[in-house]
Image 1 (cartoon, rainbow, N blue to C red):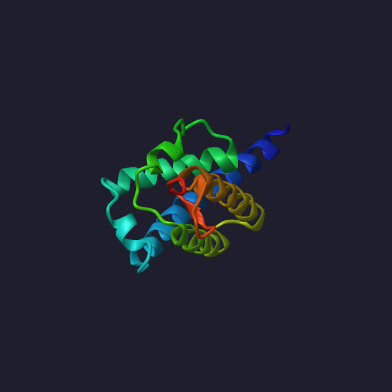
Image 2: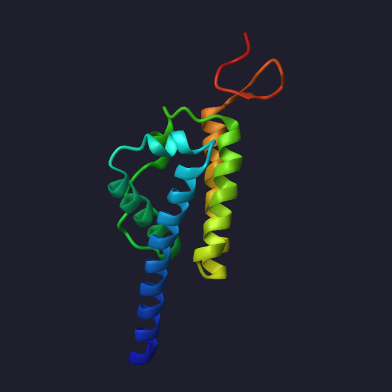
Length: 140
């Protein structure tokens, strides 16, 4: 790789890192203001530190950096999250990444978020209730 190509890649990575940070902050601002998600987002302790962790997560997901080394499902396991929260979360997330990330990175982030949403829902609501809807508890 030539020096100018390396510089271009480094500049693109730096620009995407900045866009990720902006995107994360914008998403959490929207989440905090949202009537459905606001109470959950508002209960996050040390929000600024949390935003740094989330930016590191997306940096790893989109750029392959090694700054994030966690397990997101375990962190969300005991939150008061219901099925309707996932659709709203994904709606706000999709809107925000389209506003803040380059198109290819936005599509990659949306695919990752959609997959995570499906996995989290399956893990949090592993049973089917008597009404046929996903449930945290087995039918009685």
